[in-house]
Amino acid sequence: MSGRSGADGRIVFSNLPKGNYRITETRPLVPYHPVDPFYAEIVNQGDVIEFTGNNAIVNDHFALRVNKLGVTADNPCANDPLLCNNQSGSALKDAQFAIYAADGTTLVDGPPLTTNEQGYVSFPSAGNQGLLANIRYILREVAGVPGYTPYTQDIPFMFNAQGQLFFCESDASCTSPFDHRQIYVPNIRIPQTGQVKVTKKDNATPANLLAGAEFTISRQLDPEGWEVVEVLTTDATGAAVSSVLPAGVYKIKESKAPVGYLRSPLEETFIINPPYPLPGESLLLEFNYEFVNMKLDMALIKYEMIYRNITYAEAVDLLAAMAGTCPSCKIVTTDFLDAPAGTADATIVHIIKPLDMVNFELLDENKNPFVPPISGSTNSDGWLVFSYEQIDASKTYYLREIAPPPGYRPILGDIPVRIGDYTSRPNFNGSIIVPVANLMQLGQISLSKYNRPANEGMAGVEFTLTYPDGGNKISKINRCKRLHHLA
Image (cartoon, rainbow, N blue to C red):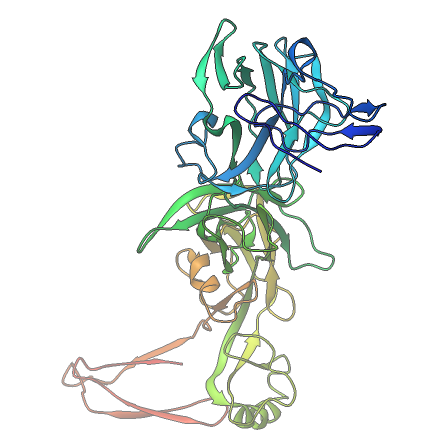
C-alpha cells in the first residue's frame, strides 16, 4: 500500500488489521533525503498510531544530484557551473565526486561516487544521512573522464532550510542559486594533438645514427600555402621530437643534412584531425619517420682520352687492336666507371688511358689548403680517393694538380668542384667522381723555304710529313713563307 502526503503534510493508511508494519519513504521531495525506514505495530484492533506533532516524521537532511557534462571550450558554461544546465553538453559517465566539509580536507560523504550511464551521481552515498541545511560544503571532482579536462576548482555550496541550493561566493556568502536544485559540472573536451619523432641514420651497414640534421615542420594554411611552425635538430642518438602540435595538415622534410652527407629528398605529410579524435584514435597522435642519408665521398680519375663517345662494340674491337701499344687502356662508361662485361653493344662508352702517380691537393671554397693538407697520388687505375669526411653539399671545392704526368701538358688553374652539380644528378649514389683529362705534350717541327739568289721566301711549296707509324700529313708554306706543323 502506498500513499502521498497532502498539502498539510499528512498521510493516512486506514483499515489496517493487527500487525507490525514497515514504513518506507519511497518518493521524497527533491532535494530532501528520505528518512530511514521505521516500524509501527497495531497491537489491538482499532488502534490509531500517530506520527504527528512532536512525533512527526521530519526531513532535515538533503540529497544532492551532481551531473557531469562534456562541453566545448567555447561553451558559456565551460568554466562556470552556474551557467550549465541539462542542455549545455553531453552526459559523461565514470567521473568521480566527493563532498568535503568547508575546510576542504574533511570528507563528509565518501568514498567518491562515480557518475552512471546517464552522467549523474546522487549523494548521500549508502550509509550516510545526507546534507544539513545552512552548512557550507565543498563538491570536488576527484577523477575526470578520458578525453576531457577535469574540473579542478572546488565548488562550495549550501542548502537553506527550504531546500534551496546556493553557490557560495565566499566563506560568509552563499547567494547564487543553482537552477533545478542540482549541480552541473562541466568538463571541456580535449582536442586532438600530435607529435612527431624523426630518426636520422646513414646508408651504411650497420647504419650510423646521425646528429646535427635539421628538419622543418610546416603547417598548411587555409586555403593555400604553408607556414613553418618548428625546426628540429637531431641529437647524438639521431633522434628529434617535436612539440605537441594542434590539429592541422603538416609536412616534415630535412632542411639541412649533417656535414658529410647528402640531404634526404624524402618529405612526409601527416594529419591531425580537427577538432577531436576519430573513434578509436588517441588524444595524442604519434608519428614516427626515418630519414636515411647517403655518405658523400670525393674521388678523381686521371686519364688521357683515347676514343670518346663510341659504341661498346667498337670499343671492344679497338681495345683489342691496341693491346700491344696501350696495355693499360680500358673501356669506361660516360660516368668514368669501368664498363662491366656484358654491356650492350650500342651503349656509348670511352676508351681511356689511366694516368698514375699524379699528385693532387683538395682546396676549400676559398682555394685555401686544408689543415692538415688533403692530398694524394693517383693509383695505377688513375684513381685518387680523398680522405675527407666533411664534404658540404652546398659548397664548391677546388682541385689543384701539383705536377702533370711526364709527357703531358699541365692543367692551368684550379679545377672547381661544385658539389650541388653532382648531387642533383638523377640516381646520384653519394660518390662524387671528377674526371680530369691530360693532353700529351706534343712536339713541333718548323721549316722555311727560301730562294737564296732572290733573297726571298717561297710560298706555295708543299711538304709531306711522315709519322713514325707511317702515316702522312701534307702541309703547304703559307704566304708568310713559313710552315708550322705540330707533331
